[in-house]
Length: 481
Image (cartoon, rainbow, N blue to C red; front, top):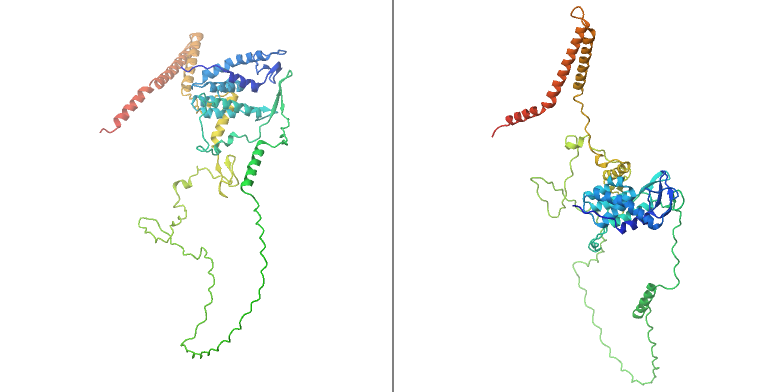
């Protein structure tokens, strides 16, 4: 038997945070009154309540909510999951919770999907339109966090081991427009919600005193300057050498050289061929282009295909042109969907970006039918319809016995009319008097009624034997082994 949970302090504090404390009763747009932390059952005009009494009224309201969560959830829940579902059901209402996709995912055992489905309930009617409310986005995030908080500690997911990647299927979880920030007044005799025009806080000026990180960075820089100086040391100045002293040395006169006889010139040797001049350098060859390379021959794949030489590149022969005779079977089908227009990406497509090649077609992010089905289920739940029967194929009502019923009723009417005429007309002369005609009409009505009853009995009570006969006939018609 599934254990029954009770609301803990975590759920009460979460509801008090987002409901806000109202000391005096205020009237809602639908005529009801509210007081305390969203209490409406016993609120009336002029009532006042303290914070402790308002918390007691909140705990009284949560009795019915906790009972509904215990009764309609069939999967074992932890205390955090139960508290989160109670906060969620208190906000959207017990009836909407019973028909929501959150409860259906819980009963299917898909807890993560159930937590993500909470974020679908983030819109409200404000100033004549249904828009995403900033406070509801934050409330759903807090309830989802409480739902996903495990009782026995968080499961580690190290970043170096499990590097996160972008999930393009979750693009619809981000609102297309910025959520509207609203501010609810908790004073006065009427509830009012206005746009929050509070200016965003400006960043504080930077303090003049240096931060600890700056001091540490300056110390590291000073140590680096000592270890690695930027300017090189100047070389030492050279020591001036003493000036050399000049001494005069008298040298002896050199002897005159004896003249040597000049060698006689050798006779010129005549060669058969003259020496050719040096060849001029050849010009640098032009840069080869793709057309200058030899084109490889295509390789035809087939049963008797031969392999080409090793220096040829592997190429396939182009496919034959598509004709009516060679078209596949499904090329001329009329039921195939037409290709999308190439004007631009669709609503659920992502345009080519830096991670795609230029000119690459856009690809779908999510299944559009899946997102529309979730939105339709939640909208039907809000309107009071059960989404479990939204896609059920209802068979039309079969009125096969209506003609028989009409014939039986007509026969009874004729019988009653004929009997009445036969008794009231009395006797008369001849066979074709009024009394006899009345009795004939009564007999005809009895006959019509009997025929209708017999046909109906034969049709509704004789169906089983006919089926048995057909089964026997089929069994006899099968060939024996």
